[in-house]
Each structure stands twice: as structure tokens, then as C-alpha cells.
Amino acid sequence: MARFILFIDQGTTSSRALLFDKDGAAVAKEQLALKQHYPQPGWAEHDPEEILNAVVQCCQTAMTLGGASAADIAAIGITNQRETTVAWDRNTGEPFHKAIVWLDTRTSETVGKLCKGQGGKDRFRAKTGLPISTYFSAVKMKWLIDNVQEVKKAVDAKTCMFGTIESWLIYNLTGGRNGGLHITDISNASRYMLMNIAEGKWDPAICKELGIPMECLPTIKSNAEVYGTVKGFGKLDGICIAGSLGDQHAALLGQGCIETGSSKNTYGTGCFMLLNTGEKAVPSAS
Image (cartoon, rainbow, N blue to C red; front, side, top):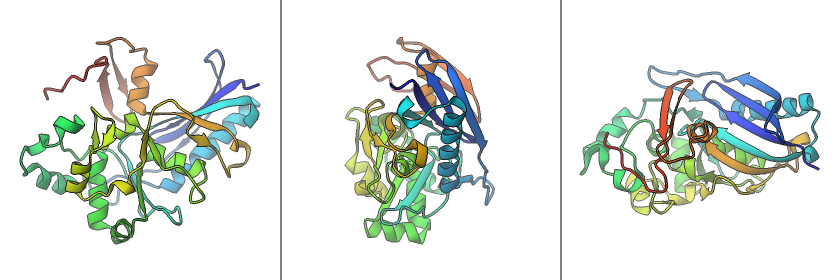
């Protein structure tokens, strides 16, 4: 009978795995630092392969420390740095470029051009809830298409897969090029600047305007459902992946902010305040 839940926390500066028992107590953990790449001022990148390898190593070590086998683990849950964007090849499973990190500002020129259109920085806000900013995944994808020849060729050939970090991890953990799932969860999808937040779906008009084919995007799933099982990673094989949530959304829940009007402020690589608006979306005034 399963005794544990295995939790993956892939952050901006490190990757962690924690093993929790049925009472919610952490019985084992492992953490590895993530190398930061700064090829130019204002640019920040991560190696997607390093992220995957570190996550797998952390999971396997936590299981060893906790004396757990795959049969002892009910499910894997994932939380991740949001917005950080990966582009990889549908045929080989290999990334075309290092991941562009959420705090990267190389897309400033792209953002400036988009803001000159009708509606300015708020031209997509009515649908996405977000202003145009270097922060969000859509402009990172557009930059990759416009500036990385391999990505542009793959997009034209319909062999490019885009995703944020949870998408990259779930794809690889469930088989990679051999049937791996290309999915995201709705909390991470809400940070792409491509999702209609009222419908929970990619917006065709915005995708077309930014030149991002919808077939390159992951399928949007809920935060809690069985997505698939781990394949090809030794002692992790057979464990189901059944939860995914962007890190700041996860922190809001973790801090117990389940009532309308409750909020949290957490301090890590950045300072992030989130507020539970309840079942009704409340547009930001800023």
C-alpha cells in the first residue's frame, strides 16, 4: 500500500524533491543547485537537460533516504518556476535552445513593438488578464521563433514543442520522444499570455497575432488529475504524476489562502504577493 507522496519543486535557483507521509510530514528531501547562465546583460537562461537530470536525481535520492520504492508512492506532484520557456524537437525530444527564464528581459524590443498596437500594453488583457510584458511565456516563444533558426524551421515543419518547465518535465518523465505527454496545467497556462482565462483555452486570435501555432502548445489540463506514469527512469518507473501547479499558485494554497480575500507574500528569487479573488475574476487596476 502506498505510504508517501513524492513532491517535485523545480525553482529558479535549485531543484528539490520531498517525500511526504500520510500525515503530511516530510520524511526525506534532496536539493541540487541550478547553474545560472547570463550570456548577455539582461539575459538569463537555464539548461533544460540539467533541470531534468537534477529533478530525477533528487527524486531518486529522496526515495532512497526515505526507504521508499515506487510501490510505496501514491503519486508525484510538481510545482515549478512559472513562465520560464523551453522549445524542443517533437521527433528527437532534444531542446533547441536553453530555457529562457521568467526574469529575462531580452524580449524588451518585442514587447515595445506589441505595445504600439491598438490597446497598448493592455491589448490582450481582456482575454488573458495580463499586460504585455517580458515576464510572460508568449513573448519568449515569439523571440525564439524570430531569432533561433532551428526553432523557426521546426515551427514551420510542425515539429516544435513549446512549454514551461512542468511541461518539459512531464513530457520527459512520461516517455519523452517515445509517447511523452505534451501538457500543461491551467495555473501555468494562465501565465503564457495566450490563454483566454474565461474559457481556460488557448486563444486562437492571440496565437495567430503573435505567430505562435497552437499545435506547438501543450494541452491544458487541470491541476489535479492523473496525467500519466513515469517511464524510463529506473526506480521512479510506474509512479503516476497526478498534480501540477505553478509555484506561486502552489504557495497561495500552501499558505492556506482558501478563502476569498486571503493573500500571501513569499520571498525567494523575487517577492510575490497573490490574493484569492474567489470564483469571480477581479481585473487588476495596475
